Length: 378
Image 1 (tube, helix red, strand yellow):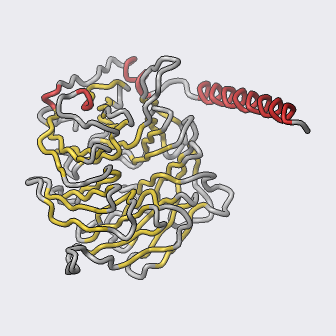
Image 2 (image 1 turned 180 degrees about the horizontal axis):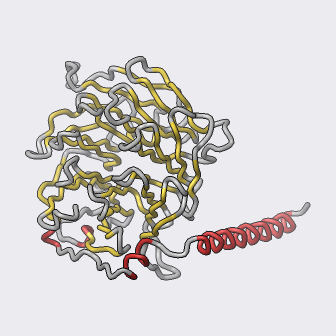
Image 3 (image 1 turned 30 degrees about the horizontal axis):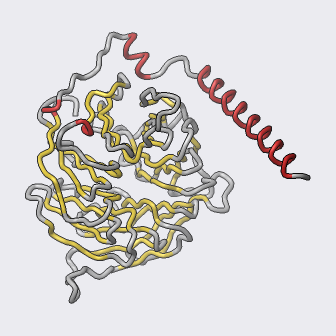
């Protein structure tokens, strides 16, 4: 077969795939007679009115020398841990902006970090395909670094995300570029379960993000470069409970809605989506219109307010949109404020009491934003 014939077949196959994708999209649209925003408008609801003084940058945390990739808050809401391309994790006092710990990691390229439920340990993972556990109470070595108390090995690709199972100090969930997720016993260092891999219902590309359901800690959701999100039950590793379709690009981030019955996702296709966990239906799309030749900024990280009325989304172009989840409208863009980040918003998270938002960026900084108003909807 000649090169010309191969190219012709490739073009034809691509056209067929695109046609099937559009038909599938139309079928899904017909199955859903409405979405959240349409229903809300039909019942007289209106969007929240936000102004720049309602969410104010009160602190800028500087200390990393590389892009910030990940952050996490402690439950007591006064400390933040961040991980960076500079190969370090830093623990910050969110009230004073002071560093309490700064540790060089075994891996020079760190992609994820997470506090344990009691805030006494930090888990970090990256390109070394391992997840390292650090006890913050351990004595430092001669270089003022905390030695790893446990290194979890078993993944065959980079560790993209990690999260402790809520209220369980010894259980940790990870996602990896090897197309799998893992459940670990931090105490023993053993991997308890592998989700995906050789199982047919697993992801077919790199897994980029995980979120554990705080309402039902047996369930977690994962997002992948295969443009899907999948729901898993930690008691049944052999198959995904459900697969969620709709995105047209890598799913970079997933996060459970506060009630534990829904979850949000953010993708390279420039949209965030809200899915019903039980039915698999897509309830709402949060995205803006772009010109035909205009670059579409990808969604890097998302978080919900405590009530679920607000969705915070960080984008590759430096925007950080505050979405009204009910009306599917942007009520504020932190990226347009004078003291905003100067690079991709790679990570963000809300304090446990919902009183503050922290954002991390490729500009090597973290910023803490305090709510000045609208506390009734936060």
